[in-house]
Length: 502
Image 1 (spheres, rainbow, N blue to C red):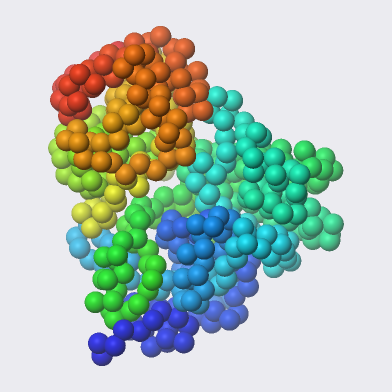
Image 2: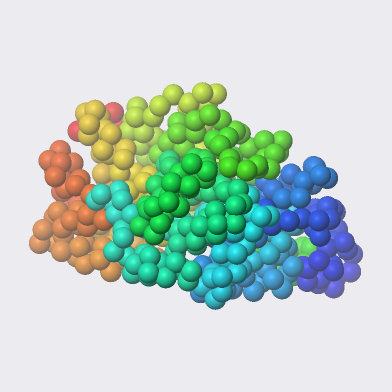
């Protein structure tokens, strides 16, 4: 191979070497049967990967993906993908240092809803579209933690109700597109959430129906009868792309890819087989279709996603920078395993075909992959949306059953310290990205005068402040942490007394 660096695009894809595994299928025959909102790294390592895998194995498959961005921040990925003919490289990094590379070809278009909402609505309303899938993050569902209901007071929600043909929120786009399909006597599309939220399909259904009822009660009845919202559990650790990933492809493979994706080898997708008008045969390439996904998603959210937050918040304060760095620290690995064993496992349902002990062992191995440098700043971003889904329900379940709450409560106390100081224990600034950052900071600062002030952020904690057992444990921990600023010593004491109900 020459040292000439080739740009990644359709005209060059046939010249790429086999080690980059470029797509051999005819991308011109693909139709935008899936419209996906939220084309971040995870979508490109997961649903787009599964679809690419299917296209490689089935010459009759014509399921392509049209990406959609709804925020001005999505313009960068839209521009890069368009310039690269929607191709990108997936870099799969194994724990032993082996690297697999694959150029993915399943995305065939990208539309910007904030620039041209009509184009997105019409693509969703097109007869070609059979699935609209979502990775809009936990915060994208705009829930009030205190009530669990959609926050109708959000300005964008009010805007969408008043301007249904010029929406800003994904739910406004969905309802308007479904309204047009109904008017044109077209079958409904499936709405498929790929977000880390328990009962993600049920939640999406509730929100879409709520939007529709406020706009058009007859449309709501049609959606209720015709639109399927399968619940799903998704799993693949996908860190933020770095300059080093781009440089790796340029140096090792002479390929210019402006936005590749790095991920781990493990990949899982468990989906309820409940679709409105057809779906790809993803089961032929490893997806699992089951009657009830709830036990799987609960297991994954409470162990993997909560485990990430446990390591992320505690590790950030201690001075660790990555997940694998935390797991290589025996104290942090032991703390995480005891959190999973003592507080999470007792509140999980039985999951058919899953050995929980092996699953937890695998999680620690995955977290410890030294070639997936998953930054704690990514893990901790938007914690105000994550913790009410991943961690706080475990606290609530253990409060109800009289189980241990100490491991999870220390994370909440540490999050207060983190939100107040915004530095690690050595004074190094932390990169914090959270929609409620200012509110959390203000509440945390007030902890010096009122140790319960942080818990008064009801959007996050709901009525947890009313539970005397929790607040007693929390106040003791937060006062100790503020006094000593040494989270590791607190963790050490806890792992030595693991199993004692408090």
